[in-house]
Length: 350
Ligand code: DAH
Image 1: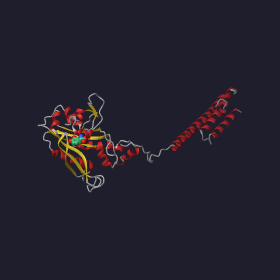
Image 2: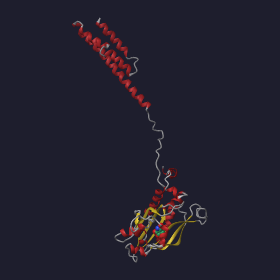
Image 3: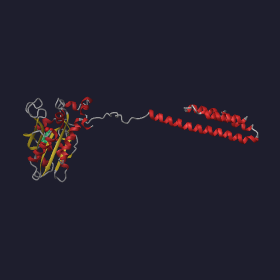
Image 4: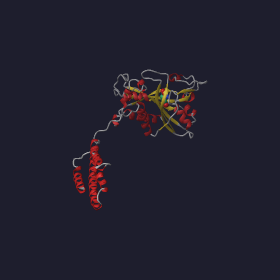
């Protein structure tokens, strides 16, 4: 009778796992057979009632049922588990051939861009970039540049003075102040080759003038420097920044800190020199002021003007940006309107 029970259960267990597909079904089966009141557990409990001589046989048979159950259970559990993992992998599969989401990058401000262009060109010619402060003394901004108090050249550069007793400090109206600083800082009083880009301030405000704008100043000091060096350098620079076809002309001019002084014109980049509204039908556009450093300036900054000469130049970087990138109103450069700035996306470099 006992044997029959075990044999029946053995048959049952053999068929038990046939149509099982889920872990839940497996768990139910485990409870029904191996749980506290499970069929196999109940069978084991019978051992107490069995006559001694049959115990051994019965025990072995029960173990056979248990082993079969455990083997089948483990096999199926593993295959269901594997299938679940594979299904998951399949459903969460990543298609690495899809193009990635575009990351929105910011853009360089047009002034940063033009400043980098200036710096690249001048560093390729051996210049170092010199940084000067925006708050300056009247001395550095004017007096040591040969513009004493009361000089009419001050009118064109009326700027903002800081509130101090003697009106000693101001926010610089020109980056030419860098000339004074660089020459004074150079203890050996030897050769110099610098460009100084930066913000300057004046009391102006219209479509082509802003109270704050950006200039770049250049200064070369050495022995035997002549007007030919000035011409060659600025001609090369204009062609590099505006294109090889650009023609350059030098007109006599006046700046207190240079003698002789010139203004530099380039052929209009819009019409190529034919005449248009941008160049006011002249074919030329003025882009730089320059000249040979005035001996007074050299001496005031501690240089022996008999031994050393130099040339200097200065220009508004905003002007170059306006011409080069076709910006009609200088105020948009400083307005930070995102629709304006987005137009300077470096698509060509993506
Ligand atoms: N600082 C002058 C200005 O703001 C520009 C300039 C002209 C700079 C001639 C120079 C120069 O160094 O030689 O108008």
